[in-house]
Image (cartoon, rainbow, N blue to C red):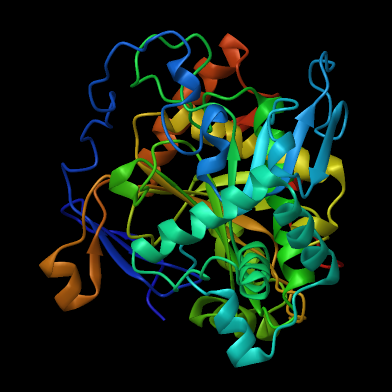
Amino acid sequence: MAQPLVRLSDGTVLQVGPLTGTQVWTIPGRSHRPLPREVRAGRELEPGEENRLCQFCPDRYLETTPEKTRLVVDDPRPDGAAPSAGARIERHRLASSLHDDEAAVRRFGNLFEIVSTASWRGNHRFIPPADVVAWAADYLADPVGRGHVIGLLAYREASGGPVAPVAGDERALLEATVDLLAGSHDVVVPRRHVVAGATTSDQLASSGSMTPDEHADFIRCTIDALADLYRSQPAARYVAVFQNWLAPAGASVEHLHKQLVAIDSYGPQVQREASLALADPELYQHAVLDLARREGLIVAANDHAVAIAGIGHRYPSIELYSTSPRHRPWAQTPEEVRGMSDLLHAMHAATGTAVPTNEEWHHRPPDVQAPMPWRIVLKWRLHVPAGFEGGTKIYVNTIDPWTVRERVVAALHELREAGTIAPLRIAEEVRGRDVRLPVVTDG
């Protein structure tokens, strides 16, 4: 196997992803290209417009599918409190009560699913859970909800989706509503489109512009959705969790959001990692974290997670590893989840709002026994792979891992001094035990 990280005499850096086998070159001189500092030019906001800029905004709730869950935060909440303190997740809101209080985070189905409920039913004989069927009936009994669903189904049909039920066919309407609510492709959305006090439309609210508490709420709702999709879709082998930030990273909506997609296979990457981890139960320690320590690529850590500059990615990347012995996010303690959330928030803040990013979650599926810790990869989408990459499967990454570490570490020191991120240990402050994954796994 090729060495995972080699610097040639001319300065070219050759990388091979320890978990993927992806080959990457970083060419001398390109690694110091500046990161984007501004998003596209904005315009002045009218009073109240910050709450209606897109279909994910608070004043436009009826433009999304029915709300599966919302997180409501009681005010005041103690500074630095765990996400469970002063916050509650409520389920299956009716349309007429959507504006009874303010949602800090909302979860709803994607109207244009990657894998539809009809597909799960046809391929796996999926039967929607009883509580979802009851919710669908209640939703249609609410006049506001009935109009909401009929409008959504008509809009989807007009956009090339399934044919909406004809007026008066109550059974078909109920079945279509159940399919809408029982979907396995969800969106998780925090409240703000732009930062608090924004005066122009380009002052976007990103993961890094949140407070650590707000980000922890966002992560809590995402993990709740992840567990619920596995619970409600028995044929799901894996649930992909990801966040696309800004259009160059694939975001079709500017408002910050995560997506979760249940699929009926593991996918090649999970299969590859599970096979490697069965052969070497300490794969992630040996192949990733020990390598990062040897090469001086440790970025930061806290008591429950560690961040490193990633090796062998198509784009400059930061990898975060949970150091919990529980590899499935929903099985972790609130403190362990909070540690991962705080470190991820710090990495987003250090990256900056103007940088297009993909956030990819990786976790051990419920029916896989191989030790696979929860990890998140944050990728900076600074370039577009082109003909060379497509023809050779060798990817030109514009920033090498050492430069990624250098830039993030410098930003973290500034953020910590400003008090905008949770406490963490940076670079040389990281202890040896912070970079050690438990051998015994559970959950």
